[in-house]
Length: 77
Image (cartoon, rainbow, N blue to C red; front, side, top):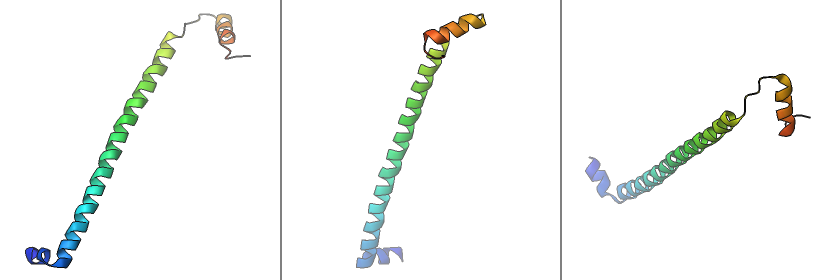
């Protein structure tokens, strides 16, 4: 039954349309997947950079030393 439908002109047109739509959907989904992976890699790089900045921050033992460090870095008035 399917073969007889595919042999008709309408069946060939519909199968061609279905093939084109499937190809477009596959390309779109592949691009979306690749973009997600690229975004995750960029997020991990940003996290690494932030973590390194946090780890490089010197530990201050007193309140006055912490306030002075913040003033030196223009992070406090």
